[in-house]
Image (tube, rainbow, N blue to C red; front, top):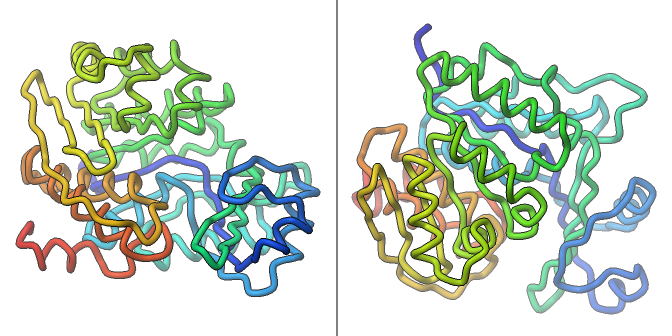
Length: 331
């Protein structure tokens, strides 16, 4: 079968709902300022109703990566689960509007929780207080894997967060097998250090046995191998997986490919909003890999994409990554 997608992602399909919220409002609503907290359905409905100037966008970590890659002009698809409700239909339309196929139709099932959403209150000082309801997206399972899409992927990117449920694990296995059967490469983002803490042994086994590449930041790699020595952690990872990538805020990105190490310098900038930096790094890096530009150039594309998105509000770049990279003579 010929590959028809440059990059396919699987992750939690979350609608980002952004509104302003001053300190008094946050206090009245019992919202802890500046942190992300998980909330239940009733709390989600209460907070959603309290948002007066809502701006909604299709979001989710790997979905943001896929949208970035689509803006580079690549053929992309995102697999994620939404309910057939107002936000679910909005999400499906939003992914398509951003240039990606969304093969999963919104699910009309009364028993399915509502579509996932993250309600983000932005204070006057720029602090973002995130209240995330995992909802339908976290119920992604084998039945939600569009096998034809997975088999048609040259590169597939999996979101570590979905590993929180057994159904997500089995979905990853099925999708990865389908992708590899079609000749594609499969990888995962470690998502966050707490996610790594929850799934350390599973992640180690997955990276060693089922992944062609793994992307994480320095905190995630240290957590995975339970060490304070980053080089030791990366050496252990490189012994298990053919391509590993470590981002490190303002420090150089470290890449080890088939035993060869490469470092990509970062020009430190003061972020307007750091949300999405890792997601867009992955978009640039995997976009570069899909374009066969080589490891070092792909790393430079990742760094440029991250720098672009942190200079603005929101997790997806306002400019297309094709325009960003063209400006810097990266493509």
